Image (cartoon, rainbow, N blue to C red):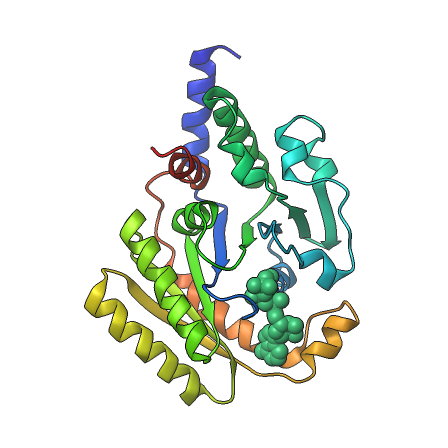
Length: 278
Ligand SMILES: Nc1ncnc2c1ncn2[C@@H]1O[C@H](COP(=O)(O)OP(=O)(O)OP(=O)(O)O)[C@@H](O)[C@H]1O
Ligand SMILES: [Mg+2]
């Protein structure tokens, strides 16, 4: 394809890109429910007829596949290095519902020559946007460059915490850093493992007060998820979709969906710009 044709093609894609939405699930502290929330969001969306791809970006202690009992042989890093096609790294979870392990692919991406990175990113963007309505990123806990890149590029940057004070403090720290470094302002907050809505709402209030005072972040509380003692059994059975949990997630999604604002640049351009320091 000539450069001119490529440019026309890209312009065409920019027009078409509003279709696919990117959701990133992040937390300061580990173990607060990112993976189970990512999977449940994926399941709710796919059950309602949307095509969903879950990206396991938790290369440290990757655990989407453990919850599902699926072991992917190849990951996004294989795709980036030309060792696997995109189709080979996709694992089907159900109808309209797939999963890809990023390995340390997104991090590795930044080490490749710029031209190669741009080509890969274009391919990835095309594949994602031709095949999926939603791409959900399950990120590792804590504050890493690639997490910041993915969260700040997402249409829906979702921060999840539990009412535990250390988790709340770490959630606020994550919001503060992403807001300061990337001028990301809109965050969606989910409070998990609550006893009651009152408890979750108090957590939201405490983070909102700090965020209003010390940052320019605007926090939207999209809901709480109750502590469900049956969930652990479902996870052990590798069918981690618990009825009550899923109901809470449906409510969260119904609060998130009307608020989609158009992105200034494409998700993947944003991720790369951040990783390459531009
Ligand atoms: N609402 C809930 N009720 C009961 N248990 C829950 C709930 N949410 C999560 N858990 C439990 O908390 C544990 C951690 O959940 P999960 O693995 O989704 O967290 P995570 O944030 O992805 O962890 P990591 O930071 O290690 O990736 C799981 O074992 C799960 O059983
Ligand atoms: Mg996890």
